[in-house]
Image 1 (cartoon, one colour):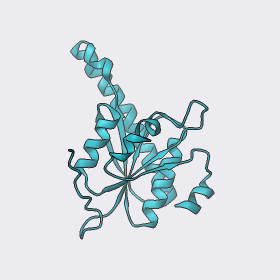
Image 2: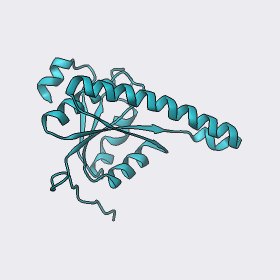
Image 3: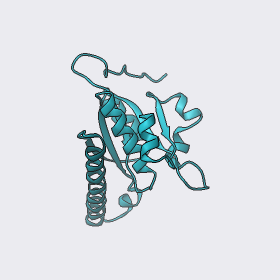
Image 4: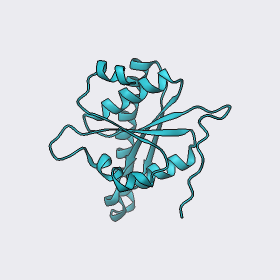
Length: 167
């Protein structure tokens, strides 16, 4: 049986944090926007996570693998900085940014275990016909029953005004 650590977000000296996995999908902006507005309205925090999935790097020569990792990290940090600026612009909050390497679900579990102020994962549903998106699909259904925190899924087609009304 897996042990779930109690969240600390409502204890003195702590605050509830919203976590968003930042990627290159267009709907990612919807998750960041909603989470930033919700965090601001509830006096919470925002954590933006970029996950580097570099399975191919392990098969490369050391120098090539290091170069691949450095380039991926730089690209991820630029994306995180852009979304952190967006959070500041729309909600006046300063987001924490985190870059980790590994499989998304494993990295998410580890970060949530490490930062017990993280209380809500915010994802945005995809806009395509193929489905709601890989992360929503992976964490939905039976997998969400064992997840240590609630998951909020924001419809990717909602406008800023519609999200303001919900946040």
